Length: 273
Figure (cartoon, rainbow, N blue to C red):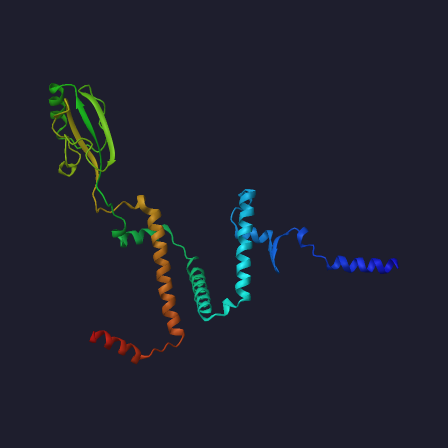
């Protein structure tokens, strides 16, 4: 008798589902579908970082969706012609994108290839605006302004000037889009690069201005400033070229036939309109 009870107990235990207590426990079931903890972590990025309320809300949303999905299957929605066509198109798109990704993602380029792409496509790396850098000077009085200008008017400046007893203040500006002082110049393009302008009274002060650097709108940006962008664009271009070659090779491998009458009729209809 004891053996019979033990045997029944064994079969009862054998029939139990221990999935709730395994290392990958079942979180919830809907019908025959089980959502395990590993499924949650695969579906939800940063699952552990969610609050308890957020985790419960996600599971509740999954339950609602699963209920609707199972009911739709019971009604045979997935077998309707339009739905089947949409599923086929979706699957086709996913498979094609995965194939393209597999064929092109492993491609890599070095800095030399990026530089060649930069040299070949300068129109992709141009300034879209004027940028100005330089400095403004203010003088203590006319005497020192005249003295400084006479001494420096032939000089070509490419950097900020040194302190000078004849100067009251030196104000630098870097990569500005417009004149820092419209009294000195309303259009910086009229100024000669690197040359000191004659002293002028502006707002009660004697001032001059020097443009040390100018980036023209439409000018090509130096490679060092855009090498990361050039590398990314060169990578995309190489992927496109590789894909184009692949398409050509595939067209040679498989027979392709088209109905010339179909296309000629379409063209005739367009001409007659």
